[in-house]
Image (cartoon, rainbow, N blue to C red; front, side, top):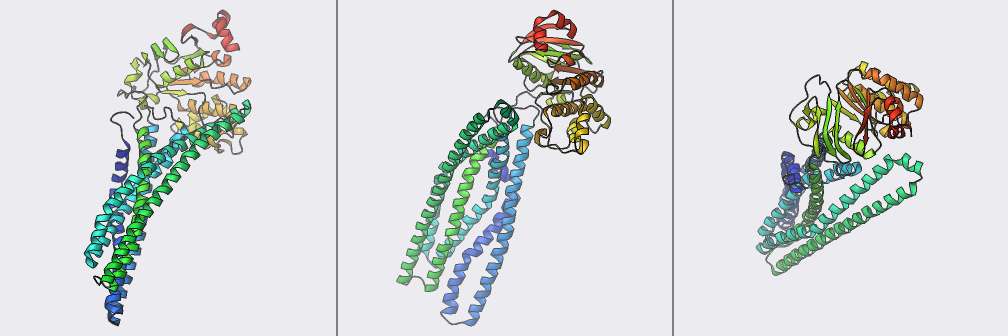
Length: 565
């Protein structure tokens, strides 16, 4: 974890601090509830001594009224406290999910490094819920401690030895309960880690289900998930055994402690040091103590799991940004002149490019890694290890990443669609510009897709657009990119799943819809390259050739092999 980032302890403290008022209110109500419950055996003992033993009807009536009031107060406080504590946990978890979403969606990136989307989802759901539960159980813990203190004071009034036994016995029991919870914390962390990984693998396999079926690789995918799921199951069983052992150990310690209190109380009653009513009160308090001790065991277990989950959340929140924070903002009406000066990153080796404002440029890279690294640089998902990328003469490193993405849009080949209507997907970045949406639909031939759907553009698409064919998804994704109407648009293989005739129509319309806007096509499609102003060929991570599509076809055998294969 990076130095200076949030730690698991800080995440826990912030979760509790954010719900401080609710936790305090719930704790006070819980203390009142537990106090009234602890007083019930005391009042019963007093009833035996002052009413039953003496035969006083008036005393019996008064004490019965006191009991009724106690039950009324404790039940009311319990209901209100439970509602507040559960609300505190949900609110704390909700705020953690917002913090995680903010970090994951930060334009500087980095939170998703080496983490599958399903794993991040698991952290934002299961781990956030467990940390939120800490805000819930704090009130329970305070209430349980208050019950123990009130019981000890009541026992002191009955008998000093009994009261001292409870007061001196509680701290060691609490310490032992905390020590017993340590293995649970460690195994809970492993359980959540394996569960998150299993969720990530499952989501990854589901997203590539069609590809797996096409390759006949279902058995390999099932074997991969079975192994991952077995690891998750084993971790969950270890955590469950640890949880059961923790609860059993706490219950055994509590049982022994309560038995000792009962034995000492019985001895004092036989010795005549306390009355029969005091003995009943002492035994009742001893039985009552089982509840607070069990509650403390539950609180310890929840805290152990919460600490483990807080560490995982802290790791995401403290993830280093993939790129630095620039402070400059591109000027309004950016021209869109893009330049790469000696850029080296991954497969790229000292790339120099000049992409004039308003130009339509094709870039051919047979090496998929080089194409991907170029997209990463242009989107500023990562900064070059050497050289610089410039927009209108300003290095991207000095620009605010969020402001940059309002000028430069990189539409990746594998862009997903949202589970919404076709039009909602296209309008995602169009700023309510109806005319831009219509132009984009026509240019991408997505209007033909809409006409084939039951409700036209208002048809709800399945998750990731799986209700559409591959070519239809590509056209809708292209329409979304075009509708955004950014000064600089980078398209990566936008028509690989589209038929030849439709691709030709898209190529012809693309030039018109992007007139006077900088457009970069990273592709090997002859139809798209034919409408570009210039084509740049990348080979071995460097610029090998530059020219018009027809010129390169005639003069460059490598180019012909790349685009006509």
